[in-house]
Image 1 (tube, rainbow, N blue to C red):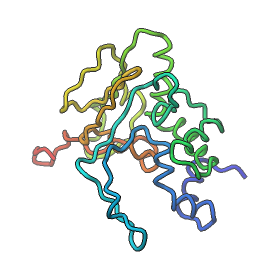
Image 2: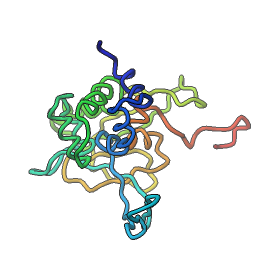
Image 3: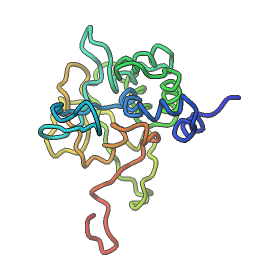
Length: 228
């Protein structure tokens, strides 16, 4: 029997079979293997402890970062860069498993790969970005949330690829308050993703936002027209 990726996802989250239990136990690693962005923190391991409840403590600010579209020469692809040349194959699944630290079920990763390439607008964007870069002349790509007149401002709608992506040329300079996400072609520095960006959670937690749904938007308003 062949099941759709959606049905397989429900099985992984709810069933008591071994593969489902292992998935739930390692769900953070699976998410990291498919994430478009990385977490930038300095962890304080002195309080983690070897017994009892495990403690996660960080020093300083919690940030999420996104790197260049292409890796530097000789450096393995990671995070969103894998989507650039992704082909839903075993090799891609093994690459994701390695980037997440190993020990994951590559068949489970392949299930998510297939779903994301089919339904996630950001996965589609990165695949189309490969064609744009191959055509030459484009230095940066900007991921931009577009305000559409037909969109219900009080509902987290599923965006399409055209609703969240725009291709531009330029030097990629970005201010700290800019809510767009700019991706450099190669060797660019890591960029912080503003936590006010409506695509923030979809880029970092694709397992939980598999359709790339819009998150909170600062332009949402209350009934009395006050900003949220």
